Length: 422
Image (tube, rainbow, N blue to C red):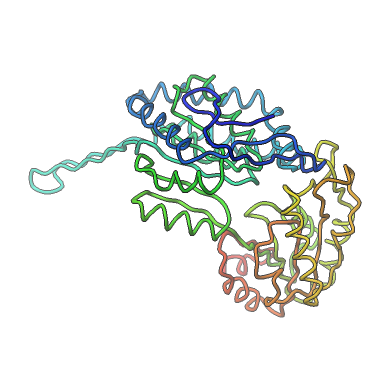
């Protein structure tokens, strides 16, 4: 099966001869090939969006809302189908995929009510015989570059809001799991969105560069790794575009001695190994403030060893990683952690999956006695690897968190409201 693009209201093929492989991560089998757009293919999509934007910007707020409400109903009614597509190409278990769809639905619902937030303002006589007013206007064509780990939720962070504001969109999903984005585009069209207002181009760096350089693209939203986020931001802003670029993370979870350790252990397992750790808000570092480390590690290990890794369609707790290359990369970090002297309390390299042996497997991995100089601490691994760092005090924990160059999120587990507030 060949996967093309969605431009001007229909699926089309492109001019490029380059292709990429799409796999079922739970079996390791190639299920499709995806066209990788050329610069010319991107231009066709952008020009379609530019033509559509001129009419869509003048569409009434009531009409925009009607399309969004209809789209919301379609996604809600077909949410199981969408979750199945996510699992088939990304590998996350169906429960995680269903949760992703729900998070996307919440943004669609927000966008349905966006007209009330698009109001301008008027101030009379701000100076002598001078009035001041503001209006909110669409930019025109905007681009979205989304990652493999949330092929539905991340596009739905941006597309419904951009559409509600009167913009036309060119979406470039990850070439690793492109099918969900194409379904969303078709359902938007079914909901009444005019041709060209939402276009999907599949591709790699060539497609991204073409979007960053195209003069008709006014703004770019990106989610992905920090190096690529920096690249997108620098190149996009240099071309005069508005850019929001969300990068990687190394999120910390601090557990104080007075915390409920069972609650903390449950949270660590869910936040560390949900979606196989392939999410930017995963907890990948647990900072245990002594003397709780031994008891906490024991509780986490008990829970981790009870997790079932396997095919996401079999009711397992954790699925495979997205590609063989990514699984090998994460496995190399586990190797590096062992070589550096961290203690592998649970070693995911030994997992026996409930699934095809050819799948891209790595089980949940728990390291203890990790130090800040180890690569498993310093790098974003983007896999099911949880590192426990032991510290002697609350202040030491805070200093450790603040020294990290990443800043997405931190959690604290304590029964001391004052400690939480500080």
